[in-house]
Every structure is written in structure tokens, then in C-alpha cells.
Length: 113
Length: 115
Image (tube, rainbow over all chains, first blue to last red; front, top):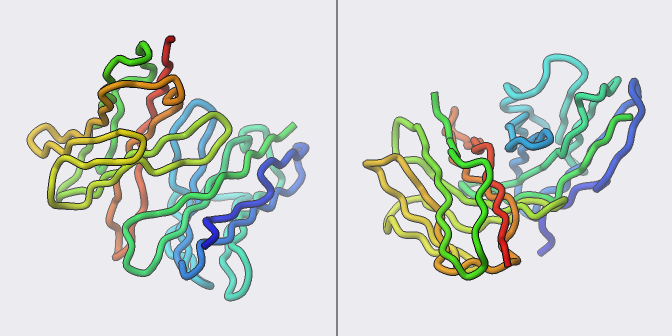
């Protein structure tokens, strides 16, 4: 049973470009969470999605950031017009219907030049 | 507001010494609490979790943690540290919101181990 998959593991973008981060939850999991870890900081909640629905995006920056979890395929975190301050590690976690435990992927480390 | 606090940013111990990493939480009800470890450039690995029941929780790699409601604490302990334990440790709690959970993380404690 494969764990949570994230790709790419490392992503380099220039300022103004778009970044797309993908997350495939564990098999059987329908809840996906995205967290951001800025350098030297802990993880901060960004968004919680279920299939085809955004449930809570209270941690998402108001502009340039969006997330989706389509019926088929991985969850996508999209950052438009990236800036240097977006450089961080982005972690995805998934959980099952009745779980209180979230399983984390290896993260995507975004570097904005 | 619900929060998780790790008072120690950096801790250095000698190999073989005992270890205690502090974690305090602020919740209205009994929280679900977790300890994760993150090695440099890696993802998070769950060490242990507390949902209910026995307040002393055993985890992987010889770690344990004790939930103390009176002190609002969930400190992580290990009796004898190995050099491979050098990493960053995160305490996290679940915030219940509208029927689902989201994790609130402490800022982390970076552990260095001297030979």
C-alpha cells in the first residue's frame, strides 16, 4: 500500500512563473490537507479538500494560490506568479473517513529564484 | 485560540543521555496530540499519538510521551539518545472544526546529538 505521493520533490521557478504541486493520497483516503513550511518554521495549515470540494481554505493566501482535488487524479496546489517569499516546503497529508491521523507525503521543496 | 507551543527551539544532548522535549497545548477539550520527526530535507514521520486512554504513549524508535492534562503538556522522552536521533521534532494537535480535523503544529525543536 503506497503512501502519500508528492511530485515533484524539488521545483525551481523564476519569479512570475507558475508552480504546480501534485499530491496523490493514500489508497482509500478521500481527505487531503496541504501545509506549508517556511524556512526555520513549523508547518502551517493551508487548505483542506475532499473529492471535488474545498472544505476549508482559511490558511491559503488570498491571491495567487489555489487548490483542487478532482474526482479523478491527484490534488493540485497551484501558485501563480510566484515570488521569492513562496519558497518553502509544501506538504500534503491524507486521511480516511473516520481517521484522526493524517499521513504525510515527502513534500515538495519550491525554490523561487 | 487553540495552539501548540514548543518552548525549546534548539536542544543539544550527548549520545546516551536522556532526552525530554517539551510541548504545551491550549485546547478547550481533550485534544488529539502527535509527535512527528523530520530529518533534514525529508518529510514527517509519525513517532506517536495520543487520542484517549492511557496517558503514557509508546512510540517508535524508543520514544514515549506522557499526556498531563493538569499541565496541558505532552512531552516527548527517550531514555538514551542515539546520534541518529538528531533531527527536528514537531508536536501537533488536532483542531476540530466543523466535523473535520486540521493539525496545528508547534514551531519545532531542533535536536543536536554530541558524540
